Image (cartoon, rainbow, N blue to C red; front, side):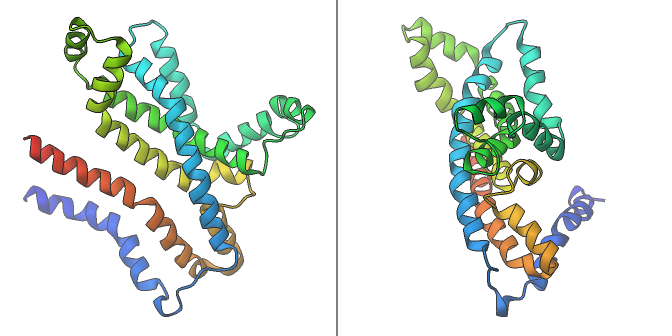
Length: 251
Protein backbone atom coordinates (compact mmCIF):
# COMPACT_ATOMS: atom_id res chain seq x y z
CA UNK A 1 0.00 0.00 0.00
CA UNK A 2 1.29 3.43 -0.91
CA UNK A 3 1.97 5.99 1.79
CA UNK A 4 -0.79 8.22 0.37
CA UNK A 5 -3.29 5.41 0.77
CA UNK A 6 -2.19 4.80 4.34
CA UNK A 7 -2.87 8.46 5.13
CA UNK A 8 -6.50 8.34 3.99
CA UNK A 9 -8.06 6.96 7.21
CA UNK A 10 -6.46 9.60 9.43
CA UNK A 11 -7.26 12.44 7.02
CA UNK A 12 -10.86 11.28 6.67
CA UNK A 13 -11.20 11.10 10.43
CA UNK A 14 -9.90 14.64 10.80
CA UNK A 15 -12.11 16.10 8.08
CA UNK A 16 -15.44 14.39 8.90
CA UNK A 17 -16.54 17.00 11.53
CA UNK A 18 -15.85 19.93 9.20
CA UNK A 19 -17.57 18.34 6.21
CA UNK A 20 -20.53 17.53 8.45
CA UNK A 21 -20.65 21.14 9.61
CA UNK A 22 -20.96 22.29 5.99
CA UNK A 23 -24.12 20.23 5.55
CA UNK A 24 -25.67 20.88 8.96
CA UNK A 25 -25.31 24.67 8.92
CA UNK A 26 -28.68 26.33 8.13
CA UNK A 27 -27.27 28.57 5.39
CA UNK A 28 -30.69 29.95 4.44
CA UNK A 29 -31.15 31.18 8.01
CA UNK A 30 -27.56 31.99 8.92
CA UNK A 31 -27.62 34.53 11.74
CA UNK A 32 -26.02 35.24 15.08
CA UNK A 33 -28.00 34.86 18.29
CA UNK A 34 -28.51 37.68 20.76
CA UNK A 35 -25.18 38.68 22.31
CA UNK A 36 -23.04 36.77 19.80
CA UNK A 37 -21.75 39.94 18.11
CA UNK A 38 -20.59 41.29 21.46
CA UNK A 39 -18.81 37.99 22.16
CA UNK A 40 -16.96 38.29 18.84
CA UNK A 41 -15.85 41.83 19.68
CA UNK A 42 -14.72 40.74 23.15
CA UNK A 43 -12.71 37.78 21.84
CA UNK A 44 -11.04 39.69 19.02
CA UNK A 45 -10.21 42.80 21.03
CA UNK A 46 -8.97 41.15 24.20
CA UNK A 47 -7.15 38.36 22.35
CA UNK A 48 -5.10 40.94 20.47
CA UNK A 49 -4.09 42.47 23.80
CA UNK A 50 -3.32 39.02 25.22
CA UNK A 51 -1.12 38.01 22.29
CA UNK A 52 0.78 41.31 22.48
CA UNK A 53 1.50 40.71 26.16
CA UNK A 54 2.40 37.09 25.48
CA UNK A 55 5.06 38.21 22.99
CA UNK A 56 6.47 40.78 25.42
CA UNK A 57 6.54 38.32 28.31
CA UNK A 58 7.48 35.18 26.44
CA UNK A 59 10.20 36.27 24.04
CA UNK A 60 12.80 37.07 26.74
CA UNK A 61 12.16 33.67 28.40
CA UNK A 62 12.39 31.87 25.05
CA UNK A 63 15.64 33.67 24.19
CA UNK A 64 17.16 32.85 27.57
CA UNK A 65 16.20 29.18 27.30
CA UNK A 66 17.60 29.00 23.77
CA UNK A 67 20.98 30.55 24.58
CA UNK A 68 21.73 29.85 28.22
CA UNK A 69 23.99 27.16 29.63
CA UNK A 70 22.85 27.84 33.17
CA UNK A 71 22.10 24.95 35.49
CA UNK A 72 18.73 26.64 36.14
CA UNK A 73 17.56 25.99 32.60
CA UNK A 74 15.87 22.68 33.44
CA UNK A 75 14.00 24.28 36.33
CA UNK A 76 12.76 27.11 34.12
CA UNK A 77 11.64 24.60 31.47
CA UNK A 78 9.66 22.74 34.15
CA UNK A 79 8.07 25.99 35.30
CA UNK A 80 6.97 26.67 31.72
CA UNK A 81 5.65 23.14 31.22
CA UNK A 82 3.58 22.98 34.43
CA UNK A 83 0.87 25.45 33.27
CA UNK A 84 0.87 23.88 29.81
CA UNK A 85 0.28 20.38 31.20
CA UNK A 86 -2.26 21.45 33.82
CA UNK A 87 -5.86 20.80 32.65
CA UNK A 88 -7.62 24.10 31.84
CA UNK A 89 -10.36 23.55 34.40
CA UNK A 90 -7.78 23.00 37.13
CA UNK A 91 -5.84 26.08 36.01
CA UNK A 92 -9.00 28.16 36.19
CA UNK A 93 -9.61 26.99 39.76
CA UNK A 94 -6.02 27.86 40.65
CA UNK A 95 -6.41 31.36 39.22
CA UNK A 96 -9.59 31.91 41.22
CA UNK A 97 -7.77 30.69 44.34
CA UNK A 98 -4.95 33.17 43.76
CA UNK A 99 -6.51 36.18 42.06
CA UNK A 100 -10.14 35.81 43.13
CA UNK A 101 -11.77 38.07 45.77
CA UNK A 102 -10.69 35.74 48.57
CA UNK A 103 -7.36 34.66 47.11
CA UNK A 104 -3.99 35.65 48.47
CA UNK A 105 -3.27 38.12 45.65
CA UNK A 106 -6.94 38.99 45.19
CA UNK A 107 -7.33 40.27 48.74
CA UNK A 108 -4.31 42.52 48.30
CA UNK A 109 -5.72 43.88 45.05
CA UNK A 110 -9.12 44.44 46.68
CA UNK A 111 -7.46 46.48 49.41
CA UNK A 112 -6.25 48.96 46.78
CA UNK A 113 -9.54 48.98 44.87
CA UNK A 114 -8.65 46.53 42.09
CA UNK A 115 -10.18 43.20 41.11
CA UNK A 116 -9.11 40.37 38.82
CA UNK A 117 -12.28 38.39 38.41
CA UNK A 118 -15.05 38.59 35.82
CA UNK A 119 -13.63 41.61 34.03
CA UNK A 120 -11.49 42.39 31.00
CA UNK A 121 -8.11 42.18 32.82
CA UNK A 122 -9.09 38.77 34.19
CA UNK A 123 -10.07 37.65 30.69
CA UNK A 124 -6.66 38.68 29.35
CA UNK A 125 -4.87 37.02 32.27
CA UNK A 126 -6.74 33.76 31.67
CA UNK A 127 -5.75 33.78 28.01
CA UNK A 128 -2.13 34.47 28.90
CA UNK A 129 -2.02 31.46 31.20
CA UNK A 130 -3.57 29.35 28.45
CA UNK A 131 -1.28 30.44 25.61
CA UNK A 132 2.01 31.77 26.99
CA UNK A 133 3.73 28.37 27.48
CA UNK A 134 2.98 27.39 23.87
CA UNK A 135 4.55 30.57 22.56
CA UNK A 136 7.64 30.22 24.75
CA UNK A 137 8.32 26.65 23.61
CA UNK A 138 7.76 27.46 19.93
CA UNK A 139 9.89 30.61 20.01
CA UNK A 140 12.61 28.80 21.98
CA UNK A 141 12.83 26.16 19.26
CA UNK A 142 13.11 28.83 16.55
CA UNK A 143 15.82 30.72 18.42
CA UNK A 144 17.76 27.54 19.12
CA UNK A 145 17.82 26.83 15.37
CA UNK A 146 19.84 29.99 14.69
CA UNK A 147 23.47 28.85 14.21
CA UNK A 148 25.67 30.02 17.05
CA UNK A 149 28.66 30.39 14.76
CA UNK A 150 26.78 32.99 12.74
CA UNK A 151 26.07 35.01 15.88
CA UNK A 152 29.65 34.63 17.06
CA UNK A 153 30.95 35.77 13.68
CA UNK A 154 28.82 38.91 13.90
CA UNK A 155 30.20 39.65 17.37
CA UNK A 156 33.74 39.07 16.10
CA UNK A 157 33.09 41.71 13.44
CA UNK A 158 32.23 44.20 16.15
CA UNK A 159 28.46 43.90 16.50
CA UNK A 160 27.11 44.39 20.00
CA UNK A 161 24.91 41.67 21.55
CA UNK A 162 21.78 43.79 21.13
CA UNK A 163 22.63 44.45 17.48
CA UNK A 164 23.14 40.73 16.90
CA UNK A 165 19.75 40.03 18.47
CA UNK A 166 17.83 42.65 16.49
CA UNK A 167 19.58 42.40 13.13
CA UNK A 168 20.50 38.73 12.99
CA UNK A 169 18.96 36.37 15.55
CA UNK A 170 15.35 37.58 15.44
CA UNK A 171 15.20 37.86 11.62
CA UNK A 172 16.62 34.36 11.20
CA UNK A 173 14.14 32.98 13.75
CA UNK A 174 11.23 35.08 12.51
CA UNK A 175 9.33 32.25 10.82
CA UNK A 176 9.41 30.07 13.92
CA UNK A 177 8.49 32.99 16.14
CA UNK A 178 5.62 33.82 13.80
CA UNK A 179 4.42 30.24 14.11
CA UNK A 180 4.56 30.63 17.88
CA UNK A 181 2.45 33.78 17.62
CA UNK A 182 -0.08 31.90 15.48
CA UNK A 183 -0.28 29.10 18.04
CA UNK A 184 -0.67 31.63 20.84
CA UNK A 185 -3.48 33.34 18.90
CA UNK A 186 -5.36 30.07 18.42
CA UNK A 187 -4.89 29.06 22.04
CA UNK A 188 -5.87 32.47 23.40
CA UNK A 189 -8.99 33.08 21.34
CA UNK A 190 -10.16 29.47 21.76
CA UNK A 191 -9.45 29.17 25.48
CA UNK A 192 -12.55 27.92 27.29
CA UNK A 193 -11.78 26.07 30.52
CA UNK A 194 -9.65 28.71 32.22
CA UNK A 195 -11.85 31.59 31.04
CA UNK A 196 -15.06 29.80 32.01
CA UNK A 197 -13.97 29.34 35.61
CA UNK A 198 -11.97 32.49 36.17
CA UNK A 199 -13.72 35.02 33.95
CA UNK A 200 -17.29 34.15 33.01
CA UNK A 201 -17.82 37.81 32.13
CA UNK A 202 -17.15 39.42 29.70
CA UNK A 203 -18.24 36.52 27.54
CA UNK A 204 -16.00 35.67 24.61
CA UNK A 205 -16.88 33.35 21.74
CA UNK A 206 -16.16 29.97 23.43
CA UNK A 207 -18.18 30.78 26.58
CA UNK A 208 -21.05 32.25 24.54
CA UNK A 209 -21.09 29.11 22.39
CA UNK A 210 -21.39 27.00 25.53
CA UNK A 211 -24.25 29.15 26.81
CA UNK A 212 -26.10 28.90 23.48
CA UNK A 213 -25.53 25.16 23.46
CA UNK A 214 -26.96 24.79 26.95
CA UNK A 215 -29.97 27.01 26.30
CA UNK A 216 -30.97 26.23 22.72
CA UNK A 217 -29.19 23.08 21.61
CA UNK A 218 -26.39 22.31 19.19
CA UNK A 219 -28.08 23.78 16.11
CA UNK A 220 -28.01 27.23 17.73
CA UNK A 221 -24.21 27.41 17.79
CA UNK A 222 -23.33 26.67 14.16
CA UNK A 223 -23.27 30.32 13.06
CA UNK A 224 -21.04 31.39 15.95
CA UNK A 225 -18.89 28.31 15.39
CA UNK A 226 -18.24 29.45 11.81
CA UNK A 227 -17.26 32.90 13.09
CA UNK A 228 -14.82 31.30 15.54
CA UNK A 229 -13.23 29.27 12.75
CA UNK A 230 -13.05 32.29 10.45
CA UNK A 231 -11.26 34.48 13.00
CA UNK A 232 -9.03 31.69 14.33
CA UNK A 233 -7.73 29.67 11.39
CA UNK A 234 -6.58 32.13 8.67
CA UNK A 235 -3.46 33.36 10.54
CA UNK A 236 -1.90 29.92 11.24
CA UNK A 237 -2.91 28.63 7.79
CA UNK A 238 -1.31 31.65 6.10
CA UNK A 239 1.88 31.22 8.10
CA UNK A 240 1.98 27.53 7.23
CA UNK A 241 1.66 28.24 3.51
CA UNK A 242 4.18 31.08 3.71
CA UNK A 243 6.71 28.87 5.47
CA UNK A 244 6.18 26.10 2.90
CA UNK A 245 6.72 28.48 -0.02
CA UNK A 246 9.89 29.90 1.54
CA UNK A 247 11.23 26.40 2.18
CA UNK A 248 10.66 25.42 -1.44
CA UNK A 249 12.29 28.68 -2.60
CA UNK A 250 15.40 28.12 -0.46
CA UNK A 251 15.73 24.52 -1.58
